[in-house]
Picture 1 (cartoon, rainbow, N blue to C red):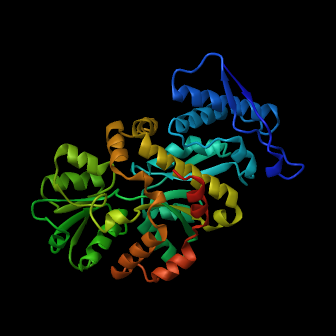
Picture 2: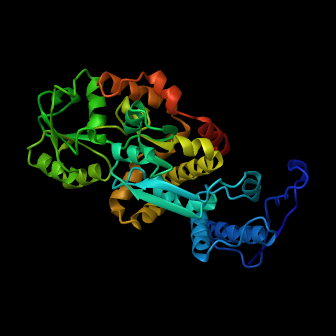
Length: 392
């Protein structure tokens, strides 16, 4: 059992506004045995106090309340939730209590799934996920307003912005999710010339990223390789049989190929330069949503970036949450341990957009210059605020 003693801070809040309590002074009658239990109990007490004082609505249904508490306790174990009354009250509530994101078969956008409960903590009572294929289809879903904000591979975002779609890139999240596998006939990227490469389809994330890689070493994706379009599972089997020479995979494909000892790694974007120096997955929003609902935008991006931190420091716990959605736990855990989810603070998001815009321009995939893409399709204000706020 815990009681708290609190004092207001009138000097920090204008007259007429509710004054938040200070950080609780803990007086434990039955001390918790673990830090996890301590944080969970503190969250319960904080929420109860806010409700009693009329600072938080008690009208949220019990299911959402339970999810909120579970998510806050989950993030609290890593010190990520930041659920201080000062922050809850200092910021206005989101302009909408509903948020729509995308769910794909890939694991690398794991923070987006872990973020569901953190989004509840940010004031979104209804969190929805729209099912879409990764890459171009995700970007198109965002442009069609089937999602408000979502993580996606940066290159498809750029392609759809080049086509005039109303997408704004808001933040980078992580690097290192794609891996190029080859047969013994392919030991380096230049060896792809004249070879057959398996991809889901022309314009798919696999095709776009591999075209970028080829352009970087002087190969022409339109002339120098033969593209074989198959579902990823079929392409991996063809690679095992030697019927295609290379395959570029996103989690869980690289984990499956390694487990089955199919092919060998030609390029690993997690360790090989220059790819390891840039984000592969970034957060994008629909332009109108970002413009008209700035508080909701900031709260949603904050939840995703906190979830990225959680994936980095508590991969086992995060993997269990993601496995609850039907993903393979072992492959998920391996992914979370391999991908540098903490890089969102360190890498320059604008440099990533410039880098991939140049590669896509060299490959003849986009017409717009990097400067035009950056000027018309990026907004770093929220990211800059959150880098200061969430110093780790």
